[in-house]
Length: 185
Image (cartoon, rainbow, N blue to C red; front, side):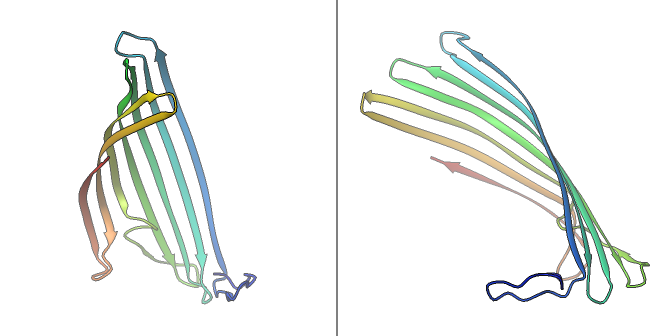
């Protein structure tokens, strides 16, 4: 998108003086696992996780206008999985939940470097929360040494709340909230 781009395969140069994105990502987790816990519980695995993503964007257009935008995302997760081996079937079952919180911002500057305005949001909606939770079960049946049958089911619920975003029709601040569910077999 910049005037310094090298065209290839029919593309053309852009007109931006600068277009840069910097990212910082991290992931950490703690996993507890145990085997042979009881007659009907052969294994358990509990995982707690934290993922963080920070991104900054810097765009200078050909006329000197500048946009500085950023977002921060932190996702916390819990995943619990159980294993049970019965005489004819092996069961794997459990649940997970992940919560992502996002903050974003954008500032626009005039060609002379003065602040023009602070925008409602950055590259994604501001003050947002996304939650995904689900439960699952999988059965593995081995009726013959050369045959394996796997059956599984998962229920998932996703909820999204965007505290502030720029409505494309009114250019004013708007809010969004919805949720979705899905069974997969």
